[in-house]
Every structure is written in structure tokens, then in C-alpha cells.
Length: 487
Ligand SMILES: *[C@@H]1O[C@H](CO)[C@@H](O)[C@H](O)[C@H]1NC(C)=O
Ligand SMILES: *[C@@H]1O[C@H](CO)[C@@H](O)[C@H](O)[C@H]1NC(C)=O
Ligand SMILES: *[C@@H]1O[C@H](CO)[C@@H](O)[C@H](O)[C@H]1NC(C)=O
Ligand SMILES: *[C@@H]1O[C@H](CO)[C@@H](O)[C@H](O)[C@H]1NC(C)=O
Image (tube, rainbow, N blue to C red; front, side, top):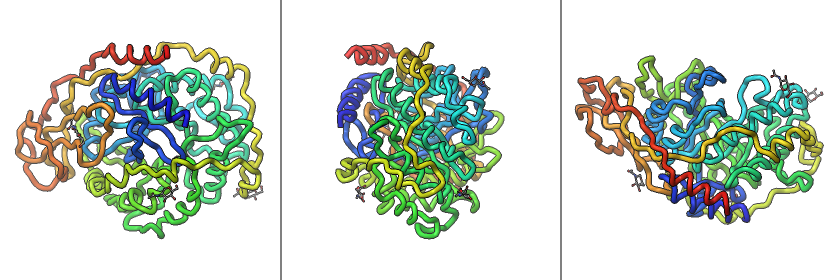
């Protein structure tokens, strides 16, 4: 509760900065909006253009480094109804202010992985004691610094799919150690609480134990408890059902959760085009009694063929039928039910950790690895560097790329809708773009968003293909944060 109150105050202050979404906080088993108290559920997508090759330290590029690309993609995500984006491999040395500001203006939260597949940038599942070192934690804290000042930073994943059949039994204790260190770093260096959680592979024999181990209350190391749990699950394919997809089993496994749970990846592609029938289940009862939504894998088409859109060499975009189908599913969500606060869920307390909770080969010891003194120094002194101070105003909002529907017709009039303070995006509410004969430069809101018929635009140019994105620094935002930091 103390956390919620301080986040409430921070939210109010941040709201006076530029077009800021309100921070989301964890309250028991729910995410809630820190100002309105409304429940928050993720309507999300994974975003890693270029796959893991899109991250290449020293090259100056990562998925959130290119302003024009972020504007192009944020417009299409906002149109589809997305309110959360997950990004995996990030370079803390890049200034992500322009991209984070664009997503913030669109009312889209970001949940960010602190790790990458490169050496010393994640826990080694075979020998976690080797990888839990100063160099690794230095990178992790740099990611925190690089994103802590943006109000739309919803959370950090301390690890992704590290526990599986091949992992050393001690891995869960190291995940708790990393989680503890990140949370302690945030407590020392951030103006507000930012949740930290784990993203699990769907290895059913280990799932309940993983969840129990990471979410229980440990008096000796309270900070090592994860704040939320993400599950990467592809068990719903085609026209599966709640039962055949095993969602009923997940509901049983997690029915007593005391932290928010969501699908940190979903969207089986064995049957194409994907129809995303699971959306109807995920965003209605009984699922919403346990889950807080999910993130579809993934925005861009890569080698593994999960894309909602294809990015062409000329930067133009082809929407897939999957994109249209997903948007149609999102448009059917009962938004009022989605945001209803649930006092039972927000009043839950975590159970105390007990060895008997663990029945698989995972360790049942709750001795969390001690922090090296070098890592303590990093937490005490902070990691050096120049870091962003917050979002800036977004002034250029017209789509910069040519976008085509699945039938090849052009989608014109696309634009970023800059939301008022304290709002986040919802399906059907901030939709731009029209298909058909409307010429470039028009901006007709459309709530249908489907792609049937219509001739393609004769010019082949989008509404604003020549305009460059230009973000002005809003000093006020920095000032507001500075004032807050003094309090
Ligand atoms: C990883 O970090 C450790 C300890 O901080 C260091 O000794 C080692 O050289 C690093 N390995 C790589 C591949 O950078
Ligand atoms: C409220 O939360 C409780 C505890 O998580 C859950 O069992 C119940 O289904 C939720 N109610 C609704 C309407 O979602
Ligand atoms: C658990 O460990 C035993 C003995 O090492 C092994 O035979 C078994 O396959 C393991 N089970 C799992 C689920 O990893
Ligand atoms: C976006 O949708 C919300 C909710 O309907 C509405 O209040 C807001 O005015 C819309 N913003 C824009 C810029 O269209």
C-alpha cells in the first residue's frame, strides 16, 4: 500500500509533464492505474524488428533507436488497440527518448527485458553462479537507468525462459538474486517503483514450481520476490478451445496467484492466417480472474513467421491478415469489464516460502545467493553515465511510411493520436486510416479498420511520406522530475 501511495503522488506529478500516461503499479494480483485505481490489463505485442540481429551493440541501433520507425509502428499498434509493447534486446548506451515519447504519446506502455543473448548479458542456465557477476549486473542497471524516467515504462523482465529441462536446479535462486538487485537499484535511484518480473517458458512440469518459487514471500530476502509473472505460451492453435488449449489447467495452476500474471508471448502460428480466437478467452471471465491480458508474438515478420506486419526494404509496410484478424478480436473486448477494480485480488498477500512448495527437480532451498560487494557498490553509487530525464513532446504525428492492407490497397490518413494526459490506448478508440480513394493528406478517423475492397491510392505516397519526425525537448518535463527528485 505504501508503494501505491508514493506511486500515486509520482503519477500526479508526472501528469503535469508532456502527454504522459499514468504509471501502472502492482497491487496484489492486479496491475492498476496509479491515479484512477482502474485495473490495467495488457493488450500487447512483442516488438523486435530485425529479430535478435536488430540489436548490435556499438552499431547505434536497437528496436527503439529509430524515431521514424517507431512513429511508423506506433501508429499501426495504436490503431490495432495495443496498450503494451514488449522489447527484448536493448542497448542502454542509446538515447531512447524519441521512441519512448512516441509510444507514450500513443498511450502505450513498455515492458522491457534487461538481458540480451550476448555474453555477460544474461544468466547462463547451465552455470548461473558464473554469470551472476559485476559486468552482467552493470549492464542490467544501465538498462534501468536508460528507462526509469519514462512514465510508460511498465516493468522490467529480470530473466526470460532461463528455467527449462536443461537448466541447473539452482537457477531459480539466481533469478531471485537478480530480481532483488534490480529492485534495490530502483529503490535507490528511481523516483517511482517500477515492477520487476520473470518471463517463463511453457514447460508444464516446471511451471507451478517456478511460479511458486519466485512469487512466495521470503522474510530474509523480501526484495527477491518477483512483482509479476509472464508466461510464454503457444498452446492455443487455430480453433482450439479453453479446454483443448489447456487454459483450464493454467487457471488451476495459478488460481491462488498473489501477483499479476499475463501471457508474455502468445499466438501459435501452426494454423494460418491466425484468427486469434484466444483473445475472446483471455479478456473475459473466468480468465480475467487470474490473468491480466497478454502480448502477441510478434509485430514484425521475421524468419520464424509470426509477424503481424512485413517491413519492406523501402520501409513500407504490408499488413498481414493476422493484423486485421487480431484488431477485429481486440475490438470485441468488453472494455468496461476489463478495467473494473477487484478488491479481492488487490488485497491478496503472498504465501511464505516453504521447501514443500517445490515438487520438481528445481531447488527447494530458499537461500538466495549473496550479493557480491562489487554489485553492492553499483547499487550504492549508481552506474555512471548520462541518462534520459523523461519524455518529450511529440509534434510530428503523420504516418511516414506507405502502408498496404492484405489485399494490396493502400491505407491512407494514418496518424498518431496524441492522447490527453493520464490516458492509455484502448481498442477502437484512437483509430486512424482509411482504405480506398481518399487522397493523401486526408485524415479520416475510421472505427471499422478492416480492409475490404477499395482501390489503392493512385499516388503510392502516404499522407506524409516526406515529413521528418521532429521531437522538441520539453524542459518542463525535466523540471517536474527534478522537483520530484528533491522531495
Ligand atoms: C564477463 O564478466 C566477468 C566478470 O565480471 C569477466 O571476468 C569476463 O571476462 C566477462 N566475459 C566476457 C565474455 O565478457
Ligand atoms: C477477483 O479476484 C479474485 C482473486 O484473484 C478472483 O478469484 C475473482 O475471479 C476476481 N473476480 C473477477 C470478477 O474477476
Ligand atoms: C529429475 O532428476 C532426475 C535425476 O537426476 C532425472 O532422472 C529426471 O529426468 C529429472 N526430471 C526432470 C523433470 O528434469
Ligand atoms: C482517444 O480515445 C479516447 C477515448 O475514447 C478519447 O478520450 C480521446 O479524445 C481520443 N484521442 C484522440 C486524440 O483522438
